[in-house]
Image (cartoon, rainbow, N blue to C red; front, side):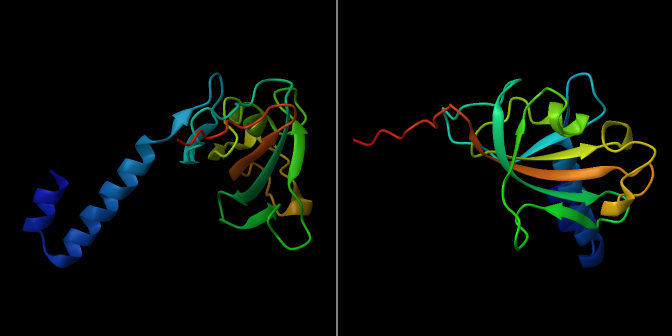
Length: 157
């Protein structure tokens, strides 16, 4: 339907229609994290057979966090001098939206989380990191490894 409308529209209108269609298709990929307001979407799928994150796992990730309101990056393990981050999943060692939002992710998967303030740093924010009071967050997190779980090996013939 969008393609048919785009053919009939002027070039400027066509760009607007395609932009709206693109945003709508991306928005439909988001899903709620069970029991939370945090939303998640898969940016890069994991290879078949990859181990998944469950409560209690020791997980190592690359992560980049940005403030929703101003799109400013406040932290990234990929920045110079930084290293991958390791935490224990599902036990409250990190903010709730991340803690619960990464459960079920697999080694090799990159997941984006849309975390509201109440499941992030709350009403107070985290001013030292540039997170304002009531600031929502986006995190893009790549699961690098899960301690004690081996990635599936490809069998070649």
